[in-house]
Length: 399
Ligand code: ADP
Image (tube, rainbow, N blue to C red; front, side):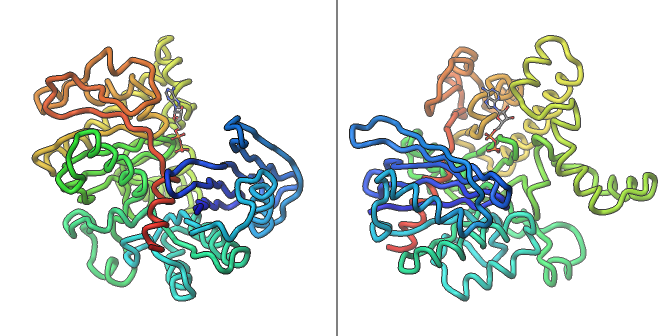
């Protein structure tokens, strides 16, 4: 049987089709620019001889329903999914599950209603995620649809980690608390780390760092998330591509009072004009590293602030966990930037973290240890695979 994983954004649908016995990727791709005059459809797959093939076409795709229809046609055309009856499940990435969802969930009318109720907590993401579920139910009415939530893995956090010190009614009546995101990725690399360490996940204490355009750190105790750096929204925590991460909550009041900035402007400022971009005008870490190496001060500062914040979270989570088995780097930056890994871990030797310079800088796309053989805490680089985790969780939810 096969599993289709869908990640629906406001103007795009990304997909991967897996065979569920050995988790081979049969096809993957995306429809982007939905609603624009020329939407782009991309699909890659392996033909009968195992040779990689790809197709790309441009045509108007007015909405998500037609986007998914186009994906289904492409999968049929390539032979990757000749008949939709071969599907065991469709797994959907849903960004926010609020407090309602602790695990992947089989979608029915009631579940759709609950996902709808959570929209105010993630107004930019959940409507598109829900749209993807609704059109998939229409297009594949007999196939189980499973919602996999970015927040679900963090639902094990204790109250002391997820509550903010603000008036109680704001939590009770309005759901203001830490939820955390990137849960699928933290869960996936956590499990892989446990396999590399040769221990059951349930016995592992880990600090996982998902560093991409969005970035978050998670403390995992005995296989469960006990703290994470993103909060009620993905704005809190680490320095990100265009998001500020932690900031004095009084800064927006100050800007509102003294510069007359309104809410929407402030939201845009902290979400889309801050982080690496705000500090140095670039949000591509490769470019920032090139500039810093050439002596550019703003780029050097951006790297320095990012590494400083990372180190602060690593230290906090070492203190929270007590015993830690491994520090795990993932995401575009975590997997590829030896520079940021080295900066974040520099000086942590007395806390048990010792990087091996040669292993850290060796070019590799594989799962690997980059710590010194005698480092008490292992430092691992593990490429994330959120789609695979969603596919596995979708299958677990239907079995
Ligand atoms: P997203 O959160 O959008 O999925 P990614 O996980 O793809 O983002 O990460 C994007 C970031 O990874 C960018 O800042 C990019 O510069 C950085 N990155 C990708 N490859 C490298 C590399 N070889 N060295 C340093 N940074 C890299």
